[in-house]
Amino acid sequence: MNPTILTHGTFSSNVPVVLLIPAFPLNAHQWDRVVEGLGDLPSIAFNAPGWFGEPLPDPVPSIEGYAEVIRKVVDDYGLTRLIVAGNSLGGYVAQTLAINDERVRGMLLVGTNGRTDSEEARSKRLSKAVSIMAGADLEPIKESALSLLGASATDQVKAEVLAATEGLTAESFAWCQRAMANRENRLSELELLKSRREFPVTIVQGTEDPASSIADAEDLARALSVTPRILEGKGHLLPNEAPALLAKILRKMQLGAS
Image (cartoon, rainbow, N blue to C red; front, side, top):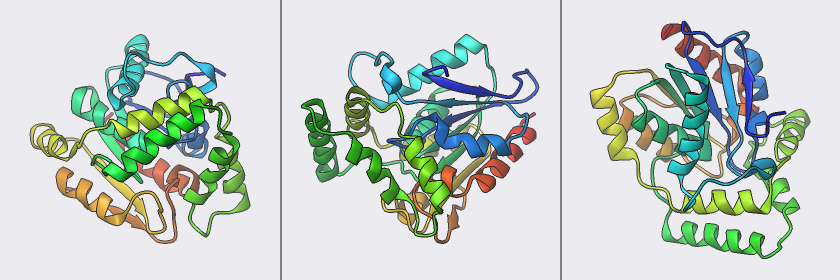
């Protein structure tokens, strides 16, 4: 496996490529069942910086640095039309890509928000980063991913989530926590983006999400002039919990932009 990306389908100039960006602390395989639902349509699923021991971007951990890693892959493949899809941390990166890259022709935001952390949340992230780099055990972090699921999640889904924590390192954990702690409020930029460039946007939020809220989804929806889709009984990790729905949304975006 390429430690940075998972590619699928046939790349061509006719169909936009979907960029799939996972939630933290999961790797690119979080999107496997969504990719299955895309059939032959092209996609690239990404691991966050530092996963599987990959080098980290320089200098300061940031969402922009994560987005730049993705842009380099896009440039290397010579891609000219993109659909961006992100869950949680991946949603922060997807927003940054859409705001700064004219190649983006559609966006799916799942269980995410457009705001900065509160001071309390930011402090907790930074403390966790320090603790892990000082030698704290990563296994409880991996297992805690299960707490992000809705109550109806099956044993299969739970197993898939745990498997998708493979490759997490102390360095990548700390980098991602610091990047999230350093992120900017994007809502005003998203409003400006929607006013100057028209493309399809879908926002999906679970009612049992412990990490982002319906209010977060509604804030994003107002900024982007759309209505959020609220999924009853689903949690934070919707690429695992509702893969068929997300695949259907992305297929419609890809084919509509072809």
